[in-house]
Length: 374
Image (cartoon, rainbow, N blue to C red; front, side, top):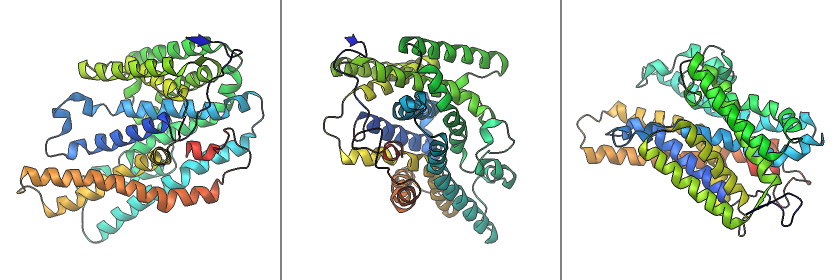
């Protein structure tokens, strides 16, 4: 089933247009559904509790970030071959412009509505005192603020800290046996979850945003461990596909039965590893673009929900039929996808092309690092 790194063939390199992009787009779509769930005529959580488990999707993106960045940069960091200033610049510029544009547009919208005497549907989520911590992405480090507004950005706040630590993490872990790293990352996850339950009263995957970095780092390390394993240990496509399918079926079954938080985290990690271990024989440009849109979906969906349902709440829906309300809700979902696409191709993509242009030498043949993680 599995051969050592010195045997032929070698593990495949990750690339665009394949299973990883499919997973990222599906996770982004489910995040939109999660944030729209309470606005449905019948809250989706009443159909099944799985619709209220958005932490699974957040976990996915944190693990996936650790995996993808480590597959791209891990060997270079371990060999001290990548300038740290260039890496930090790339990561900061990948996140900051789009984040500032979205949160700035939302703040401007709320301010203009206030000038015209229009109050938001849930004014408690637009406290101006909460905004600075979110703007500067420091809410995941115990800094007061960050509640409401574009609340999901706590994940970006926590990931920035993980990004800064990644060079030293890779320099340490790339010296070790991949199996040792994988087992160690799993044990660290379990130990951290136990500590959080004991001292903070919540499982790791449900910590409040002020503990966001504590929540994210063990998950990020799972992705790093999966990346090291995937870059050193070869698995045939048949085995990788079978293991990935088993992880997917197990994840779905676990959610049908109950939440199984830690088990779900492990299954998500296995699923990401399997997607990266499968060769992309025929890269799809459509799938590539869908995967690239995942960050825009993540950043803009909450704003789309606020604007869409805020507008319809102003007209009042109390006398509308259920069919009409479901129609409005479904159209809102579609608008969120269209809004993400417009943001991706109208702002995010051209700005990234200007600030982070693809470089002639890239970690992946034919695929720039910026395109892969954009």
